[in-house]
Picture 1 (spheres, protein in one colour):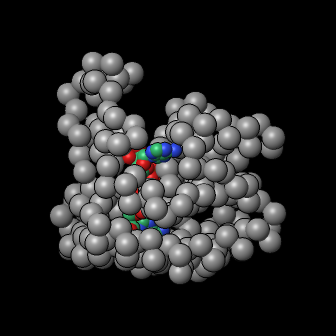
Picture 2 (cartoon, rainbow, N blue to C red):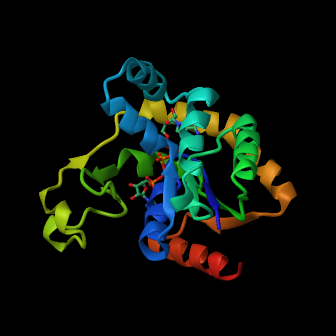
Picture 3 (tube, rainbow, N blue to C red):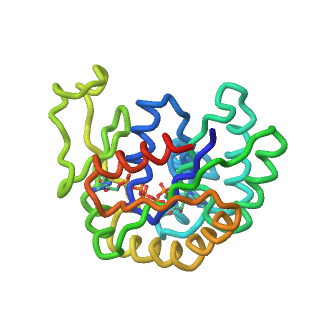
Length: 218
Ligand code: AP5
């Protein structure tokens, strides 16, 4: 089963995807993570990407679709993918449909994480992540556990990192782009009858429970 985890910046897409990876052994395909990995390569492309991402703008569809197809075509992840942060506009959604059909796959479920804008800024500004396993924490809502209590042995030597696009000016741009370009995409999936709404204002655990119950109903 392939799933799209949909929602505004800071809705909890990455947080909930990491639980699905842990419990259901699904593959998380996060375009944001793939782009951030490219940034570290210090290539010519990475300089261009950094400028775009630091302004909170969307990266071009060609770059994104190329990253996505490389992963979708891998037999080891077939029909077991969580799309996190993709698609983000109607052209990306149409490209995803044709790529999936080329590799004999479909989207079974779109989990729409609904959160009021008022708390998204706090979620984003308080976000820190483990430098080793990338798990997100939040200084206000979900403080980082002591590394010695972390379930992952390797995380004992972690640092906590902040993203360069997690600042107030970029956040307002990211939220506007979501409203104008990404949110209208929901209609595309509603017509297909695959959207389930999730109240993502609730605690992390309660959101996970809602998602698990949607998955059990399939
Ligand atoms: P991307 O990395 O995809 O960022 P985003 O969509 O802005 O989403 P975030 O990662 O900020 O939020 P999230 O929903 O994953 O929240 P999280 O779980 O971390 O994209 C970054 C950039 O890359 C884009 O701006 C763009 O430039 C580019 N890009 C990416 N994909 C692209 C595409 N397809 N096309 C073009 N460009 C693309 O949670 C946030 C915080 O809240 C954490 O601290 C967490 O602990 C906390 N939290 C989570 N859930 C809860 C809860 N229920 N209660 C309290 N706190 C919570």
